[in-house]
Length: 243
Picture 1 (cartoon, rainbow, N blue to C red):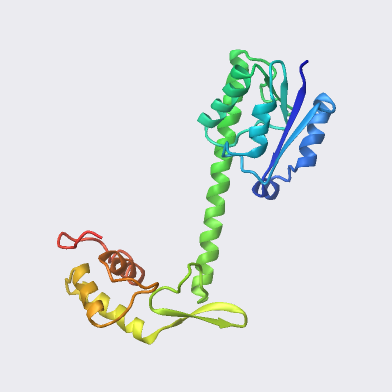
Picture 2: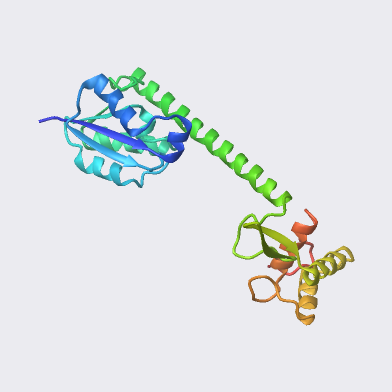
């Protein structure tokens, strides 16, 4: 006997962006088909991955003649077109079930027009996810830059070479380390004079100056410090040893 299986998914990102929570999705589905026979949920799960416990349960549960109902198609997959196509094949072709979107979106038939509509919706869902990621990444960069300009620590287990972590009014900030700042000046001066990254690393080892986090000085570590002090100044030259 065929069943209606409601699949509900929400992530923290989705709640922040659209407010389409679990309850709202179920109400949209009930308005379209009534109360579903089975309800499967994925809470706090991103739609751009297929590794979801609820989705795994859905694929195990769905059988011939069953109808998978979602509030919108992007609840099933919000990632790339290949993932969406794979998921539709798993449900429709392998399990002989069908997919219905409460919002419509061309899921009511398997005509060429219906398949085209589904492909268009998937493409827009993928585009929307990419835009959200872009905005989130830009916001994080702005936040980190503001913290950096305020002298606050912005991440990592250790302070960057040349600084120590101090706590001021409960906030972690960076304070210059005089000895390491002097070492940075030496590094930049030597590089400007034409010394290789390995030569600079050897000089720091000889002076008994330790890099942050322990270990030995390498061309890669030296280059990272130069790049922070002089953006673009750590580019390799032909006489640099491979890091």
